[in-house]
Length: 228
Image (cartoon, rainbow, N blue to C red; front, side, top):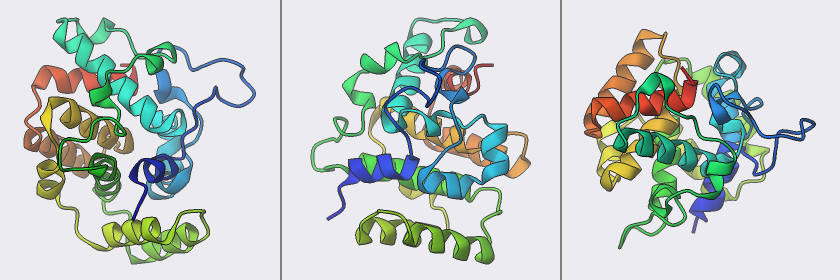
């Protein structure tokens, strides 16, 4: 059986310390969205060009804990009616005070076990496929690289199956419980996507609609990822 929370961390390639060699955490202007280049399986899916453009995203710093911190900060700012452009961005300090509903290892609802962690993985894979750049050749390359990683066989199988199958937004949305989980699914998907690409922008808009997220909350989630 997959250890879903461990798999999520391995998939995101995050770490829980400060960026190597800096001695300090990322500052403002995107918070974790200014981290190093993403590692793990996600780094393979996104590709170097997009990772550089997105500054590594939260994907390279803190893994699932950073994702939870960013989503929670957006949720707090939205609830407090703050103006998006000037709303504070999550910092390393915020990572220590995240509502349990935004932490995959604690957010499982009754009967769902650790499935929310796997839902986040599915959401990121689906988002990475949104622009169609993962063709058969690229998929083969990713398979080869994933085989070399220190994932267990079930986790590797999960990645391979998700890559082979068409992205199913309805399935992802059906596994989300509550606005907190919806916010985090949107945020990790947004972190993978480049909204300058029409297909990716359309995918993100459709996902927000499917997750039934308020427009203002979506804007706050975007702000946490980009710092803009």
